[in-house]
Image 1 (tube, one colour):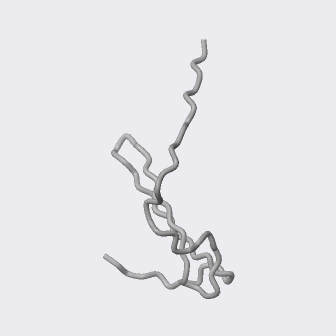
Image 2 (cartoon, rainbow, N blue to C red):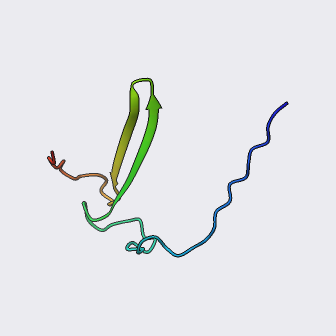
Length: 69
C-alpha cells in the first residue's frame, strides 16, 4: 500500500517585500545584483547551513571576497 502525496496549495496574498529587481535578473556591472539562497540539512551532529551567493553580471562573478567576521 502506497500513501498518496498531499497536494501543495498556496494562497496568493500581498507581497512580503518590494520587488526591487522587477524580475530583471541581469546586471550591467559586477557586484550590482546578487542572488542568494540558504539551505538547511539535518545531520547526526546537528543542522548544516549552506549559504550560496551568485553575482548575476554578464562578466560572471568577478567580485572580491569581503571579510566580514
